[in-house]
Length: 327
Length: 272
Image (cartoon, rainbow over all chains, first blue to last red; front, top):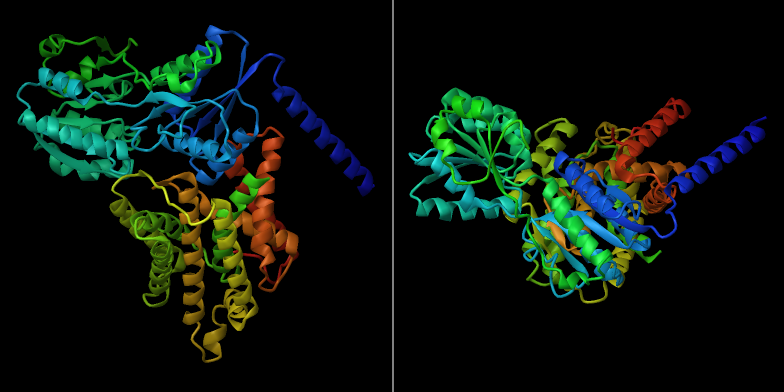
């Protein structure tokens, strides 16, 4: 009886494996693209979606996408990249610095010439994602246009003298942004006060002692702070201090202003480069590293009023403005 | 195949360390994460000082974490889980301070090709652990794990056994952190995420196939092989590794529940 059952189990396993293989097998003529993402996060998900939609829109049915997500575990990420290296993908899209760096290193070590298009990676030269070894690598760099962001903030509140930056210093890009911000604000005679947070739950406790002493609060492209934005919004509303963010989703959650690009732009830009490689046959080394260029200022009028900004000042900001409720 | 061997050699020291700490000493040691991270950070800090100094500082980082947890537990009488959590907090802060950033490019020039280097380190560490496990010390680890009060009841000080096991296990984890960072070309403050689950899964798989009640080097060695084989099998079946953490947790749960039924007098705790 037991032996008979074993046979059925084995048969069932075989059928499941065959179905899996059937579902996953590429159609003839389809090009295979791997997308390596470090963790499930709304930003990365919108980038993944934008890559797939842009390529699919350009050539319907021509591409087959495989998404590899290691959920923050670097040992799993390594296994996934080794798996991608061992398969015959036509192109690999990597999201974020860690996935891009690891993919480039492993492909170089294994002598694999599959093109890599990275996106949303800050300072790719500094982290050696782009260097003399990386002949098959190009991509989209993440940059925060701090100067323009501060200009917008100063136009919205000209009397600003002290600016509070809340950020997580674990991210090298954010540490770099902080340095740039210090230089920028010094030239404008604005004092920078910094609060470092490592977890979203620390925001309220660490920001409260400073909030009454500052004229505005700035948030960078910082996942930790953005995930705990609600606490910051409450404090800013209570003390009538305007909150400026660097991601365009924050005004929907109560930030008065945000200057930046939509995350999907990183995916669209990466997809364009991927298409240049796969369709036009341009080698990756001949495609320059780019940055998304469509920056806009997004306003939440209700939050701006609560946070002590005058609407007539906001309307005079010389910039492409988009209001909450429109995208 | 070569890639798989390389991956196995990268995590082998970590699993050897976890076998001593989690399986033999039966300690819920989450601070292996700190040693793994600190090993990579110490290597980065001493990358221009030569390989010998670099390796010494890597091992030193692991020893520091092991000693910290051991002292909190034995001297200050804190429960082990709390000591490990304290260590994670302290050493994460230290790593963050030393690194001055969350993600740093890290390149080491090795005296030989990377694969030979990994093989040499793996064989050396496996032989050292084999020798220790066959000595009285190895059996003392298992005795301590089986009954932490055994030594005290015989008028001996069990703290030395615990401390030596912790120092050994954590320095092995630190070496693994260094190897992983140099192989990937970067040190990352989140590189330790999920490694305790990896350790427990590998040790459990090793225990399932060896079924040994004595200290046995085959447990971590086969654990690494079966852990990576399991990953490969799931990938070949077309399953997404995004759910691998959940899969590992379920596997551990199933093994522990079955183990509890089978060994009702002496259940398999693995430090948890």
